[in-house]
Image 1 (cartoon, rainbow, N blue to C red):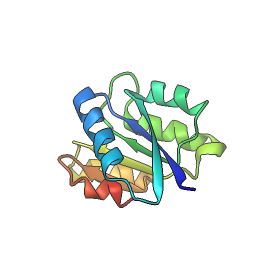
Image 2 (image 1 turned 90 degrees about the vertical axis):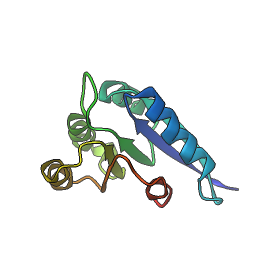
Image 3 (image 1 turned 135 degrees about the vertical axis):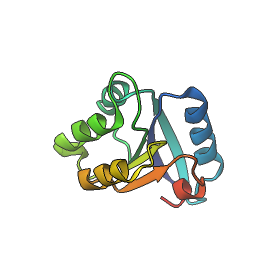
Length: 122
């Protein structure tokens, strides 16, 4: 039986969100089934995580209501979520932002535009 990988994608741009989800569904590893959950900001993602614990989180940074940096900090404050791999996928590609993401402890920081293979290799 295939393992189900639960992926949470947090992105406020609906076209980008749909594109990421489509890419992950089409290009998943054969040994995995994927269950992809969507949120358009950090608040929605935290509410969703009360009922679904993802195996990995892929999050934008620039989002309304709660940005990705604040969302990351809130996730890491919860003991039950501290071991979930966290990937920033963002247009914020300057050295300062990348350094902030890395210093916060993100597992990976990918800048847009990106090569979709970077996501599948996770």
